[in-house]
Structure formats: C-alpha cells, structure tokens
Length: 257
Image (cartoon, rainbow, N blue to C red; front, side, top):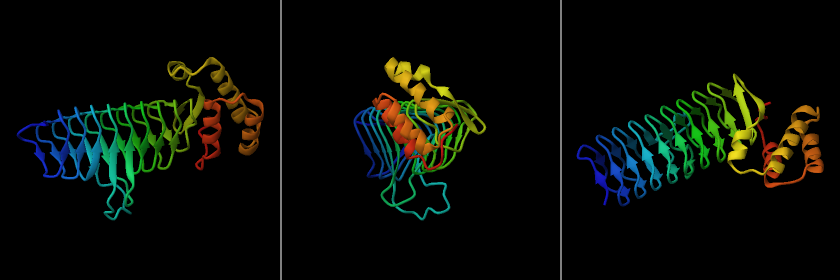
C-alpha cells in the first residue's frame, strides 16, 4: 500500500501503486497516476493528468503537471508522461502540453537537477542529464543520453541529438547535432563528444566515420543538400551515420555550427 504523510493531500481518484511514498505537505491531484516504489518528497505538487512511472525520486518543491506558461493555452485537456527510474530534484517544474490529447514526455533513467524547467510539449528521451537551472522552452526535443549543462537556455522547437553535450550557461537557438560537443552564447559546435561515444560503446570505426561526416558537413564548403549527398556516397553506413544524416536532413531551425 502507499505511504502518505498525514499532512499530505491526496485527492480522491489518484492512483497510487504499491510502496509509493508521499511526503509532508505535498498535494496530489485526482487524475494523477504514480507507479510502484516512487517517492514524492515534501511540498511537491503533482496535478492534472500526470503519470509518473516506477521507482522515481521526486524531491522537495517539484511541480509536475501544472498548466503551461503559454498565453495561447485555453485549458485543453493534455498530459504529462514520466517514465521509470527518474530523479527529479528540488523545485523542478514540468508543465502540461498545450493541445488536446498531447503530452509533455520525459522518458526513463533521467536526472533533472534542481530548479530546471521542462516546458509544455517537450519530449525528453532516456538516460539524459539536465543540470541545475536548465531551461527548456516549449516543444523542445531531447534525444537519448544527452547532457545539458547548468543554466543552459534552449529556444522553443530546438532539437538536441543523441549523445550530445552542451556546456553550462550556453544559449541554444539552433538544433544541436547528435554526438556533438557544443558550448557558448550562442552555442557553437566544438567537435565530437568522444567521451560520451566511448562510454556508450560506440565502435571505433563508427567514431572515425562520424569525424569524417562532420568534416564533410562543416569544412567542405558544400551546402546542406550536397553535403548530405557526399556523406551518403563516401561514408561507410552505420546506425550512427544513418541517424546523423536523418537528423541533419530533417532540421528546420538549422544546426549549431
């Protein structure tokens, strides 16, 4: 059974799985679903149609499922979906999506550090880290195994590719390509995230081809269309190269360079 502190307020209709813990003075809304083993600390608010998975740890003052900070929002029923084994630290805010049936999504095994903000309609993958004070505007997409440094601000609709790392205090206004290291105000491309690639077990041959791919894209002088054609023609294809080409081809905001 769930363990609810006497000072917490849990609305009728909230679905709390076994061994859920709700700390002092927290407020849980009637449409909320929380998976087994998840711990919600003190003074937290989880409201509206928010679903939190198993074995998550949510610390003091976090607010999840609150209405979007968007003047266009008209009260349409939307959701927050959070996966399993996430750590959400103090005073993190996660807002609902803005349109009916849509969801703000956080995957599994993520660490979102204190005072970070995940705005409406954001999509975050698995095994990501958002350091203290990271700010994601609406409709930001973050793929798997991304590291966002402290106090980074990400513009709305930006996409951040898998295994990218962004230095602290950066301003991100264009898409961050997969496997890259970016930093600055505005953020600029500084090379491959070699440490992250090796930790993720990416083969040395694929890393070599990724280096060649970025040389073609950033240093050849070719435009986007011709650079992608050259990459397809001259590189040994792998899942990493295939994903990089797909990411670049689908970018509408342009790439950090």
